[in-house]
Image 1 (cartoon, rainbow, N blue to C red):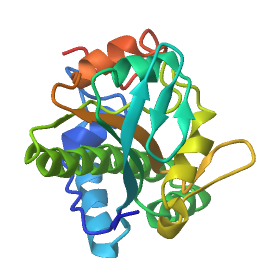
Image 2: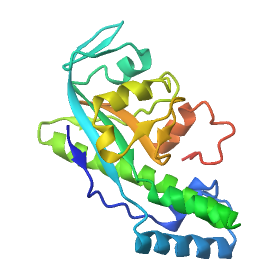
Image 3: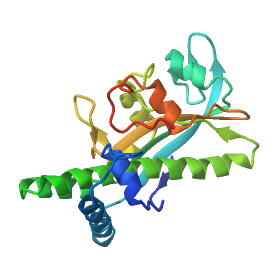
Image 4: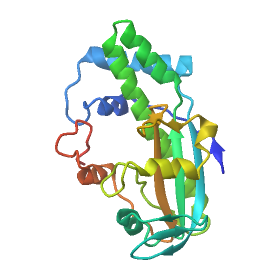
Length: 229
């Protein structure tokens, strides 16, 4: 099961601000923008990001109305997942993390009475996970294109139709422990700036924009981070 540790994660201030609910047309105070850029520089200098991905690509042996069967002998019963992968020949399962370093620094800022720095640094961490996922998918898309395949948009546990409890199954299908990722008894990922996902691979796979993902989300009416275009 492959592990990748050399995926570059380069962020822009606007990506971080969107993660703070300040994207789009929201007005941002100049000093906030300056602080975000300072924190980005500190993240790079301190090497607080340790991006890593553990993944596996499984053959899809059968998709019926009742279940999705993989070459590993495992089967999934989620109807949303079956619908997404209806044309898939393979399925990519991945766990992505930026490591614990940034999270520790967020805690230090909070304990030192600097909650604004902590909040903005936490947003940098969330944006970094987003960028890591995008870069990983780009790598897999390039890899499978040589076989005439495409990769679908990813689906994460917790999205509508895909229960959060699926985290346990996904982490069991890749070497999540090799990149330091685990689950607490309540199902929370550790390090916190980590994510798990599945994506279909096949001749014609479904893809959607981030705005379309936001439109499907159950938090679309209240989320400060959503995109509308």
